[in-house]
Amino acid sequence: MDDEQRTPGTDGPRPEPIRWFGTSWVERGPGYWARRVLVAIGALAAAAAGALLLRFAVAGVTMSEAGGFVNVLLLGAIAICSCLAAIRTWKVLTEGRDSLTGWMAEDKSLGAVWFIGGVGALVAYFFRSLVEAPGEGVRRAAHERAVARYARGREARAGRPGPKPGRKRR
Image (cartoon, rainbow, N blue to C red):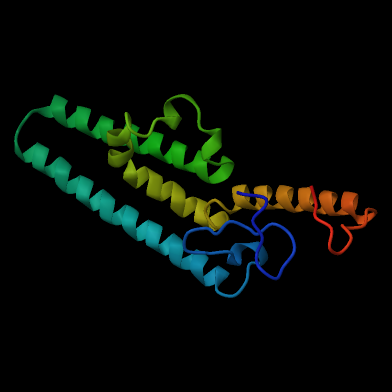
């Protein structure tokens, strides 16, 4: 968040909007709770649709009669990818994208893992939306730090008069 960005007509740093919530998460304003419910329902519905799609994919491999070993490998790969994607999504929503290190920070090289594990990511998103707007905790902490920095800066400047009229600042 750029701490120097200000909302016109107001003092202090402005909060970053969250997808589907805008800045209603700051004061938990109008529509916040309805959006939380709709986001949770949407994530659960998308996870169910993704699980159905994976079920069709597994059924296709099963019908090809590739063998039991291939079926076990496929189910294991889907389960592992879903768990990894859920862990990564939970970490992003609770600690922020900057906290990702190692294999979790890889977007391009592990893109297939995140794609296959999309159901796990959606389930993590659903459970996080039951607690707060996904990503709200990270954004709230950053906003509170920015507001505190801004308040300290105003206190430090309170004793000093501004430049005299007609004089330019250096």
